Length: 126
Image (spheres, rainbow, N blue to C red):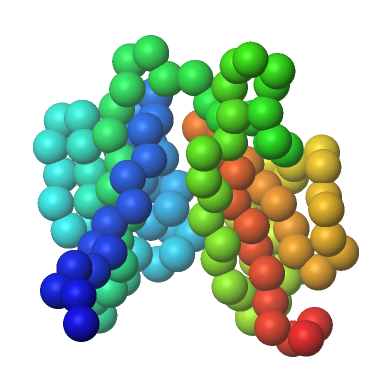
């Protein structure tokens, strides 16, 4: 058995503190550590955390796919919710935007305030 485990996903942003605040409110996470250009947030009871670092030359990824010879989406977060429509509305109120391309009717693709794509989904449709 491997002794390695995923502890944190790190997202670059033009402002680490602003983006950490968005996800902290969206997920109900708490700040675990912070520095001037870096913030770590995670679930209050422990578990995989999210970290944000300020990148002065930040360029947002593209959704969907990639630009020919240019930017691409490197990863996205899947967030399970109980109420897809209600949580989509809450994410929009917190500063997310609905992506123009929606590939599935039971998933909502949104962009966080820094342009990272993330998906809200619910098991209720299964």
